[in-house]
Each structure stands twice: as structure tokens, then as C-alpha cells.
Image (cartoon, rainbow, N blue to C red; front, side, top):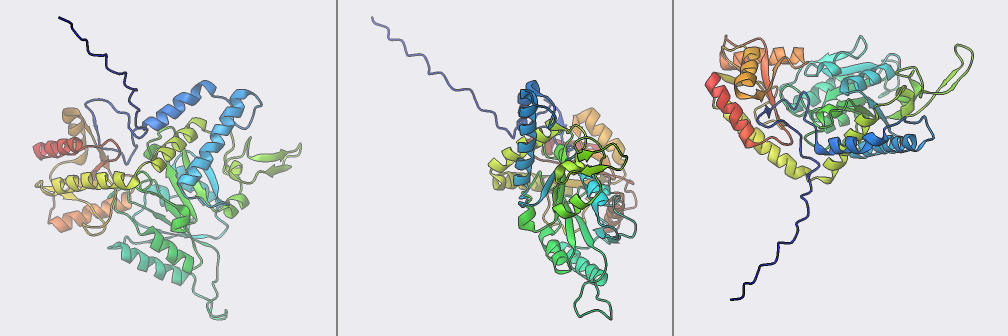
Length: 426
């Protein structure tokens, strides 16, 4: 009898890893993306590839320095493209969103009035000069547009002796978040930008929480400045960015005085000519690996199907919010109506339970990481806690809240595990 052996199976090509896979620890459920997102494979791979070549940026003629300088400037272009930067915008690398907004605050022309809302993260409340205008949190996105229109109308009211319609006074900057870090609710940035433009004001957008979840395009939104953090955009290597109009940045004193920010330094104390462009505000050795990691994630997201990612996240967010609403004694915090557009962030309280203790028990017993506190947005978080107590008719709410946030790599299993744990704890 002749035995015919089957041919060996053809070798299969190795599986190609998804650059948007996120790194994690097996068994741990990370629901704290809004504070710091996990590292995407694209960021880790980009850093690993460049590390053997690591060298000085803008300061050497050797092969390592030339390669690193090219990688740094390519990263700048990639991040600018990802954010829809205009041809004459500057893309300045910073440490994070807070650093970027502080840089912008230092660059404001003298006498600039800054208009913000009370729903901002501290990074968009604290850097601005004294005399800034803080508007109350509106009841809905349309209310934000109306409130800004009225406030700018007062600031830009023509003097009685001036020509009809003339705009008087110093510059005005509107500074607003694109998505709340407390509730995830989205602000009507494009509409606010149109109001600012109509009144001759500029607008800066804190995109730290929106950029990981949805496209942010400076030109399409018609905004003047955008700031974000790499560590919230799956690139936790200590880089952020400020993108926007060049004139204020080029006219301002350097954010840091030092090497790289100058075009000439003479022997006399004041014989200094400062550079223009991003270099003016990037003195010292830059965070090359942070910039490259951030650019790698931007490139991976630009190549991805953002609509599909958005739909998957929204389905998961709906599951989370509906599950929380079904739990007795759990109240969600919100600024606007329950159907307002939002990204994958939910803050809530468990009536009768201290939020810090609940977070600690979730971590110790269930291996679930969430955030507790006031989320570096104390005025907003305290207001929402008071409103939740009034809405629910409760007097036993804790003084701080819990926050669960999701993104790439989050699953229905993670959400269901949190809901089951909260049901057991409550």
C-alpha cells in the first residue's frame, strides 16, 4: 500500500501588529485613560527604533545627530498635519497641555483679556492674566454660544465717540476646552470660534481630551491655537504641543532663555538676538523621544478609520452609562442634558460611600483602576456634585467623585467588570 503524505503547510507570514494596540498588564482593568492613556504600540516601536541612534538635535554634524534632527523635524510636520495646521502656523513642542497653555499665556500681547468658562481644567483657568473673564457653566452647548456672544459684545462695545461698529480696546482671547475632562461632554468649538471671529477675538482650544477620541483640525475649526498632551494621546513620553498663529509667539519673549532659542549672543549682557519660529520657545535639548512617539501615534490615527473607532467607543460608552444608571445609589455628573455629545469619560458618585474608599476597593479587590477626586477642575466638579445631590434629592453624596474613562483597548468585559464591582460595593 502506498502512503501519500500531505504536503507540509505553507509557512504563514507573521501577524502584523496593529500600531494602535495598547500595552497593558494582564488582569488589570485600566479605566483611567482621561488622566494618562496607555502606550500605543506605534509609540513604543518608534522609540525603540530610534534609541540606538539617540543623539543631539540641531547641534551636531555626526550621523546620529543628523538622523535625530531629521526625526524631530519630521515629527513636528507629522503632528502639524494631524492637527490641520496652516502653512504659517507654528508647531511648538512642550511638556504637556498645561505647559502649552502657560506658554501661550506668556506670549499674550500686553493688556489681552482672556475669556474662559467655569467648566475648564485648571490648566485653562490658572495661567491667564488677572482681569480675565470667567463665564458661568451654561446649561447646554447653545447656551455657551449665547453667553460668549454677549460677553464679547460687551468687551468689544464701540466707544460712544468712535465710528459705528469700530472695535475698541486691547486683544481678546477666548480659551475653551473641546471636551470636558470631568464629564466627557463636548463643547461647540466651531460655533464658539465663529462667535469669536465675528467679534475680532482669537480662540485657543484645550484639545487634551478630544484629540484621543475624535479628529481635531485647526483650519477646519477656524481656531487660532490648539494645545494637547502626548500622554493622553497614547504617547506617554513627556511631550505636548501648542499649534497656532505665529505673530504672538514670534513677538513674545522666549518661554525659556537658553541654547537653541537664539540666533546670536554677543559679549555684552543684552547683546542677544532671539530666534523666530518654534525654536524661540524650545530652548535646551528637546524631548526627541516624546516628539517622535507623539508623531507616531498621530500617523497611526491618521491612517485609521476614525469613524469606526468612534462608533465602537460610543457603543461602549452607552453600555457604561446605561449600566451606571441602572445601579441604585449611583448618580452620573453632567453639565448638559443626558443626550449631549461626549467622549469616553463618565464621572459619578456612589451615594453614602466615600469616593476615595470606593476607588481603593475597586483597585485592591477587583484590579480596576479609576480616578477619584475633583479631577483638576475643582470649580466644575464641586458644582456638579451639588447639582447631582439636588437632582437626586440626596444628602449623602461624598465631597469628591469617581471617573471612569475608556479608549483604545477598552472592551465590554472591562465595562461589565466595573459595573459588577460597583453593584457589589453599593
